[in-house]
Length: 87
Image (cartoon, rainbow, N blue to C red; front, side):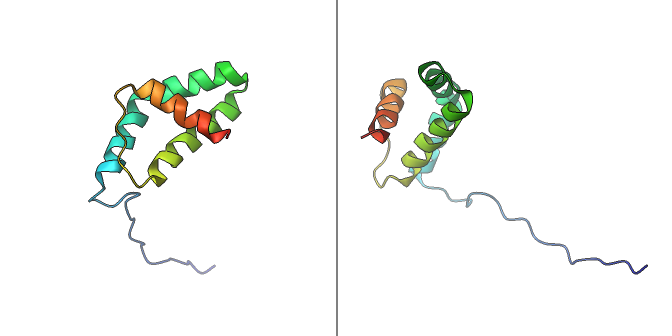
């Protein structure tokens, strides 16, 4: 039996090393408030999987924004972003 070996592939980072201020702000919001948002959605919807999907979508919408995130009240801000999904 012949051994087959592929050349080693270089791993690329998930995010570029020079990320925008928006990405830093969304990363901070995610780190500090994702668990809270997921729990809030889980209680509201009664479905842990749907809550996870919607929490994920909320942060993706924030990353797609053109303007910076300036959330003085992060939990209120995140629930507003989530509520706008329904409209």
